[in-house]
Amino acid sequence: MSTLAEFQIYNTYQCNWFNLFTPLHLILTLTSLYIYETLCFMIKHCHNLKYRFEIHEHNTRSKNDLYQQYCNTSNYQKSVLNMGTKLFNKLPSQTKHLDNYNKFKKELKNFLLVNSFYTIAEFFSL
Image (tube, rainbow, N blue to C red; front, side):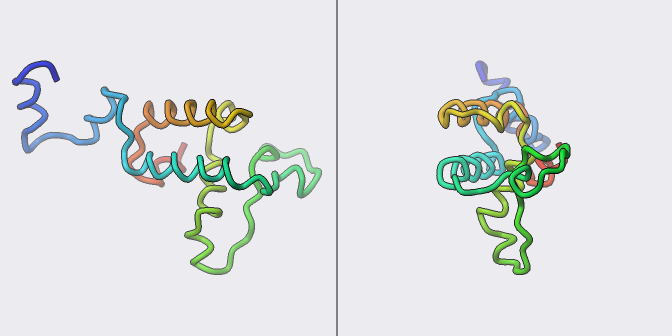
């Protein structure tokens, strides 16, 4: 915001906060930050998770996704492990299969900055 007039435009009651994040591409929304932190945790700490092609040998579209365990309890459904698996499986394939952790973080952050998700449902609707 280079001028006072631009600041006043953003500071009115009709301000659409959804459009503030998109042109700047500098700040992650709260939901995007949650997605970013959850996926970084998954990549860094969950090396023993299995992919679907390790569970069965059927050649399916989702064979390169993480295997999501069946969960009976709401505690497990809300857990980082379960949500992280769901989030990871929705990532674009070029981001999903990066070997280097730092490259993964950079690519993920760029993806989230460009898309600016405001709810988890928006992310899952990709």
